[in-house]
Length: 132
Image (cartoon, one colour):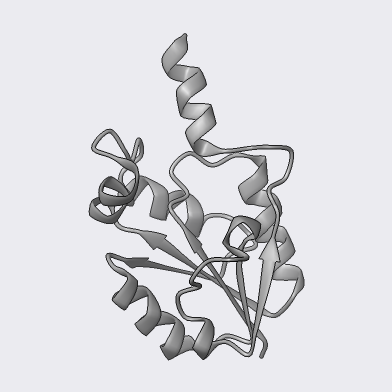
């Protein structure tokens, strides 16, 4: 069984996220998605985030047909431990991480990059909503 891993906040889902999940699932048999805890999102993105709490985000992700398993993590250490545990065949990360430190890359057989689709961004979407 070929295992694929990806992770993120997934605060407000948009078509770019669905394309990510679809692409990830096409690479293997099992897609595992890690999601940042509410506390980690606040630390990374500010006190007004997440818009949707962990229960909401977990519930929605769990219902997406491309995703087989969802895990919540609260720190880089927890994320790395989860990736080590699953030892994925492919770790898929955003294209903006090409020159960054990719957490868990030592435990994946391969790292692939996924570029944004159509310029979608949860942050941009939230900013547009706030301007209304």
